[in-house]
Image (tube, rainbow, N blue to C red):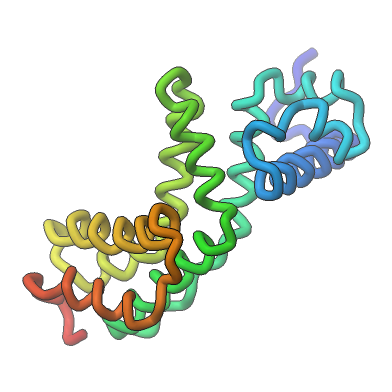
Length: 192
């Protein structure tokens, strides 16, 4: 007889899932996509490869849960109600994440695999959504809807290029400059 969705989960299964997802997320952040194999995750989590394959038949399945965990653990700076200050805080948080070298490795792995795999495309989109949530929220609260996406692209793009492609520090002055440039021709919706 099949279990209904209201039946409690076996605690052993819950523990296995927790341990394997934690090991997957740690491997992904530390070593990247290529090193995060079923064998490596099984070794880190202390389970057999068969157990890992039973719950996550493909690498994309494993990555989906690992990335979900990483995204859940991301903290957003609180909004204070000042458009410039809130954007500065959100962009500084993004820059910090990028400077740690974790997020760009995650995104690179998803982008590399996205051309061949819908699951990887979904992961790429999830990573982008997660990375831009703070900035998008500030822009949505402070700008007209038509201005949100262009400003988001300019701001996030500038931080991403500076931190990853140019390998330069994303300074406070740089963030202030790109905010001023992105908002130069838009009207805030509130008294920001």
